[in-house]
Length: 88
Image 1 (cartoon, helix red, strand yellow):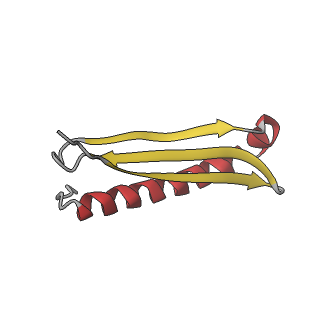
Image 2 (cartoon, rainbow, N blue to C red):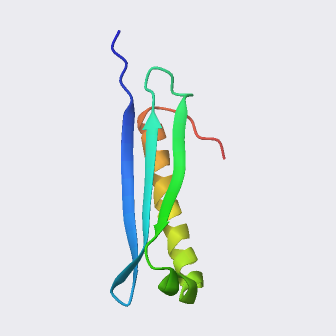
C-alpha cells in the first residue's frame, strides 16, 4: 500500500551587520489519509555567531517570532487545503 505524506519546509537566516547570526528552519507534515495526524517539529534554530546573538538578543527574538508567525501561516494554509477545520 502506498502512503503519501505532504510536507513543506521553511528556512530563514537572521543577519546583523551583514553577518549571519541565526539559522532557522521548520518542517510541517500532514498525512492526507488522516487529517487529524499532523506533525510539526517546531522551529529549529542554530546560533552561528554567539557574540552578535548576545548583543542583539531582543531584535533577534523579535525576528524569531516573525519566523514563527510565517510557520503558523503555512500550517493554516496546509490544513485549509486539506479541508481541516481550525479551532480558534
